[in-house]
Amino acid sequence: MTQATQAAPSRTAAAVRLSGVSKAFGSGAGALLALDNVSLDVSPGEFVCLLGASGCGKSTLLNLVADLDQVSAGEIDTGDARLALMFQEPALFPWLTVTGNIELALKMRGVPRAERRGRAAELLGSVHLTGFEKRRPHQLSGGMRQRVALARALALTVDEQDTSKGTVLLMDEPFGALDAMTRDLLHDEIERIWREKNLSVLFVTHNVREAVRLGDRVVLLSSRPGRVVEEFPVPLDRPRRIDSPEVATLAGKITDRLREEVGRHGS
Amino acid sequence: MAVETRKRDIDPALERQITGLDALELGGRTRLKTSRRVWGSLWPKVAAIVLGVLAWQLVVWSGWKEEYVLPGPGLVFPELWERVQDGTMAEEVSTTMQRALVGFAISVAVGGIIGATVARVRVLRAAVGSLITGLQTLPSIVWLPFAVLLFNTSETAIMFVVVLGAAPSIAIGLIAGVDYTPPILLRAGKVMGLRGFNRFRHLLLPASLPSFVTGLKQGWAFAWRSLMAGELIVNFGKKSLGAQLGTDRDVNDSAGLLATMIVILVIGIVVDMAFGAADRSLRNRWGLNSD
Image 1 (cartoon, rainbow over the protein chains, first blue to last red):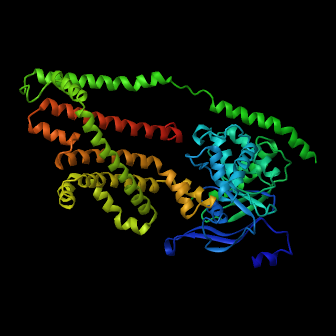
Image 2 (spheres, rainbow over the protein chains, first blue to last red; image 1 turned 90 degrees about the vertical axis):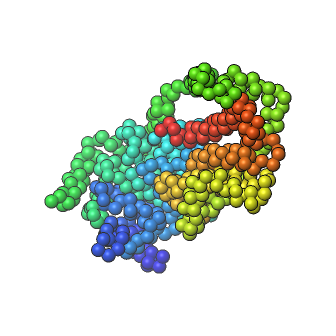
Image 3 (cartoon, rainbow over the protein chains, first blue to last red; image 1 turned 90 degrees about the horizontal axis):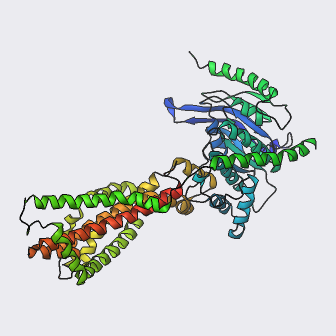
């Protein structure tokens, strides 16, 4: 906290600030260094895509930011932002209805019982799922489930006391298990919600085009250990299309750099 | 500003595309009519019963045993009908089922409390986890002589054996359910801030329900066996199904003996089917079968 206030005058406060973050699993000679000295800022309202091959510690990094795991060294400052994490799997509770899943999240955020149903309906409406409140997760398609998961993540960012706080959405390859058509539509959806709700997003993916399609900035991580190799600003106008030539050109450039990085691990 | 207007242009189209894709992906599920489904699951059972009775009749016809030792269906079913009509069967069934229900209810309470406690407290798990598994494998009839010493030939002795037979399975069902909660749901719970009692109440307990129902089903089977053994051995003159077995044997009434056995078998099957139906409906509701 003190560090954040000291740094504040020189630059605008970041929604998420990682300074020299390292994470090792195990200890001694067998220890595995997953992240090595990663520094990264996500500005308020910024959409940052973290890109890397297998073993770059992308998921580890999100777990650290979400406070599900502790750093080995360095510091993570999320200020007073409200965090929500979304996984590749929807991870909905199968014993609850769609609205029940959202309402539980709202309950955990201290929303009074009387308001939960209405708030859940609102959130489900924002992901185009009005009319599916009473369904069970297994009765929905993969894309719909993932949208329920998105609504639940948004529910977790609800703060009754202070509505001025920023919201950081951490997404761990959220569309990785979906077919291309569904993914394409969900890209539009997440972009729309990101704007409407003025979210800061840290989006992990191994899909280069997806990263360029969505990100204001693409941060390339190396593998074993994960280090920031290079950052690519994405100066393209929105809305973008994943199959547009501009996206393809930048994606090609990033892919070359990624291949170079992966190649270092060959013998 | 230009971006803002463009966004609004896109929205209705996007909404239409998304709901359109949803409709496509959800469409085309067929469901058999209820009558067809019932008949589909019923006729193999009816056929099996007919075949079983036929085989039994064939053994009788083969003359392997005297008919007063091994009576055929032609003697047993009239005997059964007679006992149903003169009310003895109703009296026996009522006593036995009361014991079964009370014993099972106590087992659920005991097994549930023990299971929930052991599942939550790590030290307790290490201490008594294997003991509970051991108790489950111990045939409950082994407890009978001890139960008689403790409680004499009484209702309590029978209940004691029933509960010892059923409670471990029920506890194990609950513990296993908590243990095998999918890790991704645990992670989701952590993100949602589910901790302590909330975590147990909103995550672990519901997640363990299918396994708990399986435990209940197995617990019932053990309770039913223990009850029959208890009634057969701890006989203090009260009419019950198990006691009737002993009485029929004492007077060499093999037709009556078989009639009682049939009733015991039928009750066992019916209750097992009820648990099966509960289990299936739970799994369907959660989508554990379909995908």
